[in-house]
Amino acid sequence: MIITDTQLTVANIKNNSGMTTDEIIKSETDLWLSSRARENQLLGEAYYRVNGEGVEILKKEQKLPKRSNIKRVHPFVRELTDQKVGYLLANDPEVATDNARYKEALDKVMDKRFMRLLMRTVKDVVKCGMAYWQPYFNSEGGLAFKRLKPWEVKPLWLDDDHEKLGGFIRVWEREEYVSRQKKAVRYVTYGDDKCFRHYRYEEGGTRFEPIGTEPHFCLVTQKGGKEAKAPYKWGRAPLVYWKANAEEQGIVEQLKSLVDDYDRQASKNSDLLADLAQLVWIIKGYGGQNLGSFMDDLLRYMALKVDGDGGVDTIKMEPDTDAVAELLARTRQDLYQFGRGVDTQNEDLGNASGQAIRFRYGNLDLDSSIIESELQASFEIVEWFIQQALLLTGQGDFTSEDAQIVFHRDTIINEKEIVEICAKSKGVISDKTIMEHHPWAAEDEGERLAEQEADAMKRAEEYQNAFGLKAADGDGAGAAAGQTQAA
Image (cartoon, rainbow, N blue to C red; front, side):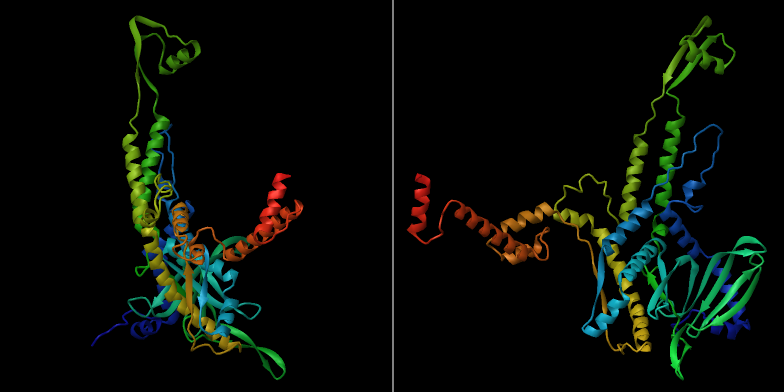
């Protein structure tokens, strides 16, 4: 017998353990709150924002009094994350389908707000490895999606590949007044294919109290000439999941050690430079009382009095920072290589040929392709919810239709090289083809050229009329021009 669905669900845990549903949900919630996966997602957010207790360099302690404790935090995670998001979504994606009515209905849902939500979601995906949406109907009765924070959601999978979702647990906090004091109260929601169950942690998290259930959503219906709200359920767990990759790993899981090492070495070097004295004084036979008075006399009188055969020598301190600079440069190179990004500080990038630029963007393009593939798969779930919403609200049955989201990546090119190729292609290929590949050509470039040509001809006619010239065929025009010159 081959068993493929090995993950435990609330239903089969209950059947096999004798635990109640509430007890299982609390147990799963507690496990999630202390899980490594959630910790990594919180680290992704902390390293992206370059603050928080999770950033390793910010934990650096002051070991010696009166010594520097510089903490240099470098936002590599933020730069690499924004680079991937910008590369993939700088241009709004569009939906392609053969059905015009379906396309119109999809465009209404996937408006500018939807695209902004998608961009923020992809940012969550890159930095945390996962992202989530919860579908709902807004106050206007239209379908919308709420973005949930990755570390708030524990998906309950039905399979080892994490493609079939049986339900989810969401844990979040909000500030409330409790006994006249403002406190953070923790809430839990469990959602499956039937309904939502809501809970609240009481007394510092020791008690787990159920506070009610509710349907997935309600729609306004007409009953006996009166409006009424009817409860509905989706028939599946109301959650859209998004992944960065099959391993569900965010960028911090892959780069944390390199980022920490870069921050640590840079901070140590800054401490060294800040604390290092320019001169070390060697004192013989000084008549003062202590080193403090030595420095006071030196600064006040620019001279020192010494006894007998005493004297003062100095040793100039010149720290060798080349080794640190070399280490930082190598670590930076590793960060962009394994983070699959492009180091824009590379001096050769601006002068690179088109082929070299494509090579340097190869890793970024590869990572974007993986993310795009995962986004395409998640869009199928989004499309399912849209189709069901359109069917429920009487806007049409499009459940047999198929749509695809198309991403338009920002392609980096060497414009000078492309312009030269276009110029050399004149007469070899059509002007229209050249125009289509010219980096500066607008969509209506042909119309602009026609207007420019018409304007030039108009100015030429005005010039001829100003000198009494008459445009004519053959020798007449030439004679008239000759007479004008002779005059």
